[in-house]
Image (cartoon, rainbow, N blue to C red; front, side, top):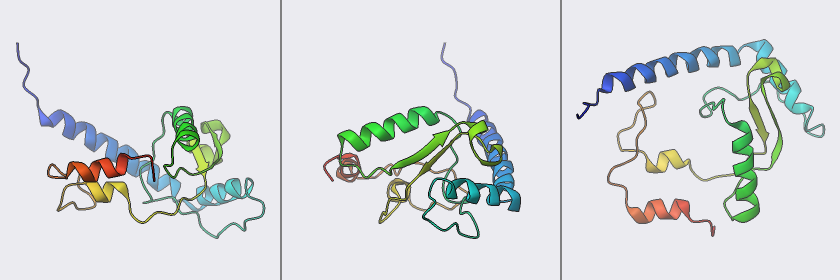
Length: 150
Protein backbone atom coordinates (compact mmCIF):
# COMPACT_ATOMS: atom_id res chain seq x y z
CA UNK A 1 0.00 0.00 0.00
CA UNK A 2 1.47 3.32 -1.02
CA UNK A 3 0.85 6.36 1.14
CA UNK A 4 0.41 9.70 -0.53
CA UNK A 5 2.55 12.47 0.88
CA UNK A 6 0.60 15.50 2.03
CA UNK A 7 2.41 18.86 2.24
CA UNK A 8 -0.27 20.03 4.67
CA UNK A 9 1.47 18.13 7.49
CA UNK A 10 4.78 19.84 6.75
CA UNK A 11 3.06 23.21 6.49
CA UNK A 12 1.27 22.72 9.81
CA UNK A 13 4.51 21.66 11.53
CA UNK A 14 6.39 24.57 9.97
CA UNK A 15 3.72 27.06 11.11
CA UNK A 16 3.73 25.68 14.66
CA UNK A 17 7.53 25.88 14.74
CA UNK A 18 7.43 29.49 13.49
CA UNK A 19 4.90 30.44 16.18
CA UNK A 20 7.03 28.91 18.94
CA UNK A 21 10.13 30.63 17.59
CA UNK A 22 8.35 34.00 17.30
CA UNK A 23 7.21 33.76 20.93
CA UNK A 24 10.77 32.89 21.96
CA UNK A 25 12.22 35.85 20.04
CA UNK A 26 9.78 38.22 21.77
CA UNK A 27 10.97 36.94 25.14
CA UNK A 28 14.63 37.16 24.19
CA UNK A 29 14.52 40.81 23.11
CA UNK A 30 12.91 42.06 26.33
CA UNK A 31 15.08 44.51 28.28
CA UNK A 32 15.37 42.31 31.38
CA UNK A 33 16.42 39.25 29.38
CA UNK A 34 18.96 41.21 27.31
CA UNK A 35 20.46 42.64 30.49
CA UNK A 36 20.66 39.15 32.02
CA UNK A 37 22.43 37.84 28.90
CA UNK A 38 24.90 40.74 28.92
CA UNK A 39 25.74 40.20 32.57
CA UNK A 40 25.99 36.44 32.10
CA UNK A 41 28.41 36.65 29.17
CA UNK A 42 30.45 39.36 30.91
CA UNK A 43 30.97 36.93 33.78
CA UNK A 44 32.96 34.66 31.45
CA UNK A 45 35.00 37.43 29.86
CA UNK A 46 35.90 39.86 32.66
CA UNK A 47 38.44 41.66 30.46
CA UNK A 48 35.78 42.51 27.87
CA UNK A 49 33.47 45.41 28.52
CA UNK A 50 29.81 44.40 28.10
CA UNK A 51 27.93 46.25 25.40
CA UNK A 52 24.70 48.05 26.11
CA UNK A 53 22.68 45.49 24.20
CA UNK A 54 23.00 41.84 23.45
CA UNK A 55 22.78 40.86 19.79
CA UNK A 56 20.52 37.85 19.94
CA UNK A 57 17.48 38.22 17.72
CA UNK A 58 17.73 37.65 13.97
CA UNK A 59 21.25 36.22 14.13
CA UNK A 60 20.38 32.70 13.22
CA UNK A 61 18.14 29.96 14.44
CA UNK A 62 17.92 28.95 18.07
CA UNK A 63 18.50 25.26 18.39
CA UNK A 64 17.38 24.44 21.90
CA UNK A 65 18.25 20.75 21.75
CA UNK A 66 21.31 18.59 21.80
CA UNK A 67 23.67 21.18 23.25
CA UNK A 68 25.98 18.55 24.69
CA UNK A 69 26.14 16.76 21.33
CA UNK A 70 26.84 20.03 19.52
CA UNK A 71 29.66 20.83 21.92
CA UNK A 72 31.11 17.34 21.41
CA UNK A 73 30.96 17.69 17.61
CA UNK A 74 32.50 21.16 17.69
CA UNK A 75 35.30 19.91 19.94
CA UNK A 76 35.94 16.96 17.63
CA UNK A 77 36.02 19.19 14.53
CA UNK A 78 38.38 21.65 16.17
CA UNK A 79 40.77 18.89 17.22
CA UNK A 80 40.65 16.81 14.02
CA UNK A 81 40.05 19.15 11.07
CA UNK A 82 40.98 22.56 9.72
CA UNK A 83 37.36 23.71 9.71
CA UNK A 84 37.17 27.04 11.55
CA UNK A 85 35.24 26.25 14.72
CA UNK A 86 34.81 28.76 17.53
CA UNK A 87 36.31 28.20 20.94
CA UNK A 88 33.60 27.19 23.38
CA UNK A 89 33.65 29.42 26.43
CA UNK A 90 30.81 27.76 28.34
CA UNK A 91 27.70 25.70 27.73
CA UNK A 92 24.84 24.54 29.86
CA UNK A 93 21.21 23.71 30.31
CA UNK A 94 18.22 25.96 31.00
CA UNK A 95 18.87 26.24 34.73
CA UNK A 96 22.50 27.27 34.13
CA UNK A 97 21.89 30.16 31.73
CA UNK A 98 20.49 33.67 31.94
CA UNK A 99 16.76 34.26 32.37
CA UNK A 100 15.88 30.59 31.91
CA UNK A 101 16.18 30.90 28.13
CA UNK A 102 17.12 27.31 27.63
CA UNK A 103 20.20 25.30 26.72
CA UNK A 104 23.01 27.49 25.43
CA UNK A 105 26.52 27.57 24.02
CA UNK A 106 28.61 30.66 24.67
CA UNK A 107 31.37 30.75 22.07
CA UNK A 108 33.88 33.07 20.51
CA UNK A 109 33.13 34.72 17.19
CA UNK A 110 34.67 33.21 14.07
CA UNK A 111 35.28 35.69 11.28
CA UNK A 112 33.71 34.58 8.02
CA UNK A 113 33.21 35.93 4.53
CA UNK A 114 29.75 34.51 3.96
CA UNK A 115 27.00 32.38 5.40
CA UNK A 116 26.81 28.76 4.19
CA UNK A 117 23.03 28.89 3.89
CA UNK A 118 23.35 31.94 1.66
CA UNK A 119 25.69 30.05 -0.64
CA UNK A 120 23.62 26.89 -1.09
CA UNK A 121 19.96 27.90 -0.92
CA UNK A 122 17.78 28.11 -4.00
CA UNK A 123 17.71 31.39 -5.97
CA UNK A 124 14.86 33.79 -5.28
CA UNK A 125 14.84 33.13 -1.53
CA UNK A 126 13.07 35.73 0.59
CA UNK A 127 13.70 36.12 4.33
CA UNK A 128 10.36 34.59 5.42
CA UNK A 129 10.51 31.70 2.94
CA UNK A 130 11.29 28.17 4.03
CA UNK A 131 14.89 27.70 2.85
CA UNK A 132 15.82 24.78 0.63
CA UNK A 133 18.91 23.64 -1.23
CA UNK A 134 19.43 24.91 -4.75
CA UNK A 135 18.61 21.87 -6.91
CA UNK A 136 21.05 23.12 -9.56
CA UNK A 137 24.03 23.69 -7.29
CA UNK A 138 27.28 22.36 -8.70
CA UNK A 139 28.71 19.33 -6.93
CA UNK A 140 32.17 20.95 -6.81
CA UNK A 141 30.72 23.90 -4.92
CA UNK A 142 29.19 21.60 -2.31
CA UNK A 143 32.40 19.59 -2.01
CA UNK A 144 34.32 22.82 -1.47
CA UNK A 145 32.24 23.58 1.61
CA UNK A 146 32.74 20.08 2.99
CA UNK A 147 36.52 19.87 2.63
CA UNK A 148 38.43 19.96 5.91
CA UNK A 149 41.75 21.09 4.44
CA UNK A 150 41.02 24.82 4.65
